[in-house]
Image (cartoon, rainbow, N blue to C red; front, side, top):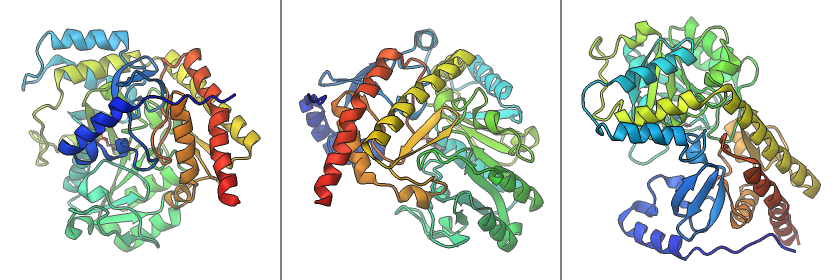
Length: 444
Ligand SMILES: *Cc1c(COP(=O)(O)O)cnc(C)c1O
């Protein structure tokens, strides 16, 4: 018996053709194009709870969850009600409004070191603005980031690793001037010695170190014990700021994000960035931190930052309803679901002899097709991405939609019920066979 069900994709295929004419690659964010796994991306028509339904009528258990925001599940009744209510009162005012205050209060209440926040519309805007604030506050230009950490498509932060220590990165995207990337120092993640060397050489010029609180954009690679504390210690010793990017981990790893789990590692970060969960599926993000730093922003201070749709009343209503819905029961359910799925993967892969490592940040996890722990971007790159591609498609054909890349976390929601979890677990054996069958062919 085979678990495979070949699914119709005629409408997605036709839509992709249409899309390619008017949208580069047919998509509005590159990973959606399936280039890493091959095949045709599925165009979604609707979503509810843990389920996605595509334009051909196929139904999938969603393990992308919009890359994090749909923590309560799709079209959650309370969030939907908040959105409808807000929409009935107008779409955007271009003036201050109450929801913005309530959402800011919710964030400040959850993340202790954050005294003030400014709302923006995307995680990219949040990190870009935090960077400007750090440079404005320190009157320095250089920025340290870690290879494999993603902070949105900010020019200065697109740079990845060159090999060696304290590489002055070349731009990693066409269109980023070298002069811009010149001030970015890229270091290997979890490498305290490299960080010490960078500060020894350039300490007086470094405005800030930006890090994913617990990286999730090279797969999940948590900080090794002492690494976060080393960032805090070195930045403080050299008068630089520490920016903790919690756009992915914020309000997902715990009520207070990764910070809520790890706590103060020799002191709190100076600035935080948030996005994803706090927008509830709408464009809302934020950066925040110590009030004395945040007061440097216009109109109080000299660092300019603005946005026509910042604090949009519908986005803030969705974000607030989502955060209010993120109760202890919700975090407990995320944990249960994530462990059930990861446990199933581990059991199936072990039985099938597929090398794998599962890594965690709270209930956030990812599966690496590799038998060694992954502590850096170089480690992550050493996994078997072709095996992931075969696995991905075998799961997709059985109605489970994973992130279409081996370098992403798997996202679950509190709406993933036993039926959804069962569907994932049932799909695993055939997907494991798809991985190993092809290995045998290649080996022969
Ligand atoms: C998603 C993400 C961003 C970028 O957010 P966008 O809303 O896509 O611009 C920044 N940092 C981290 C850690 C992220 O995961």
